[in-house]
Image 1 (cartoon, one colour):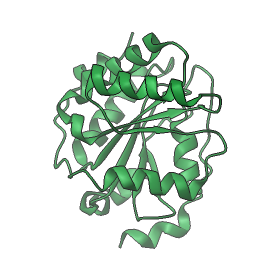
Image 2 (cartoon, rainbow, N blue to C red):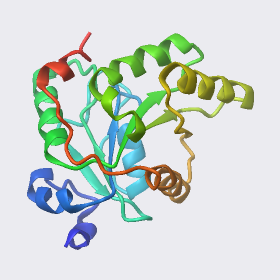
Image 3 (cartoon, rainbow, N blue to C red):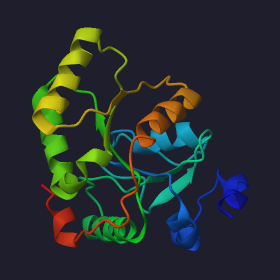
Length: 210
């Protein structure tokens, strides 16, 4: 059973070792985005894990890593970051293999807050090269949004809705409550249906490399 490995959550759990169990899950959530945007931070928050994080230009996440959410029985899966400066081809092959192997319920694009809309459009456009067919399964997570006022949040929501037709937007901070994070993710996930198989090729992922 999936939950039998819950006690191992503070250690790296080899993804392929539990691939068959992960394939059976109806609540797989993948975190996708550039290096340093906070994917692994969100995994650690939602699952009470201690995976390495970095704000540098290299990715601490060299393999697909995952754990179980503290609430709602979701499997949160953290992919190697886009724009990594080391082992680019290795990152692409890892992402392609994992994405093609498992059913996915929700794809989270993790984007660090910026006062410039151009930055959001560039990063989101980069990721939509890969996932444009699965727009109904996408949630945007804006990290490091401590100093965003309500007006700015409304501007960002309007941008994603009208420019990209994406309505699921979640703002998070460094002090986000881990249980609230799980509940917010689940609220979006519960409106979605599983993608049985994502058809993806390495060259599709290569479009994300500048």
